Image (cartoon, rainbow, N blue to C red; front, side, top):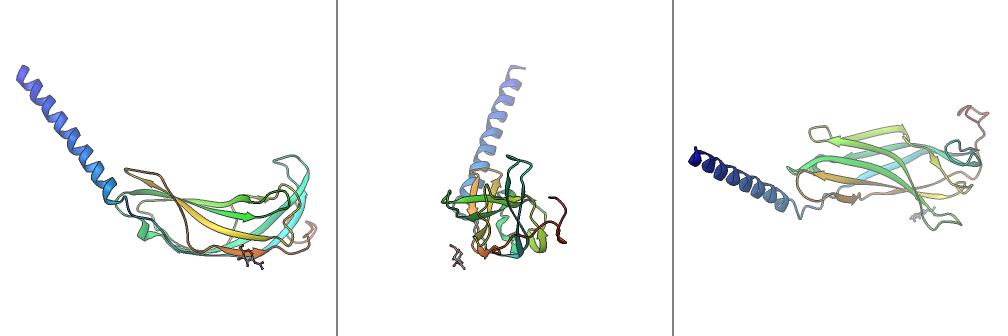
Length: 184
Ligand SMILES: *[C@@H]1O[C@H](CO)[C@@H](O)[C@H](O)[C@H]1NC(C)=O
């Protein structure tokens, strides 16, 4: 009995060491991988409305509306240490009161085993593009995709994709009485 337990103990310790070594191996073998990728992004039919921001201060603010085209093949990012990708698209622009505004417009989780080649056309933004004032008209907005790499072992990586794109909002508001929506 005594020797059985001590053998079990030895086996257990050995198993833990092997698992730790394997995990370290996975981590080291992917440590220098940069997980870069290129995307093509474009914004279609950007318009600006001026309407009540129900989620915030109930003041009237600028709301940007646009459709997205995005093409990317992120399948090569899935090496043996990558469990999932978290993609998110950020709009960045400058206003008189802020040197940098960042608004997340869209995101997506891609699990290992899912197809990571995306070809999207005229997709609505997932989140509202509110300015905290009235500075979207005629403004130059840069769209950038980034991803977090959630790995099996090791760091959480943050990577900005190559291939951002810019567009300029029109210089006039669209009123909600038109064909666009009746939310005002
Ligand atoms: C918009 O901003 C981007 C990034 O700063 C710049 O490369 C681009 O030339 C600008 N476009 C216009 C029309 O000013």
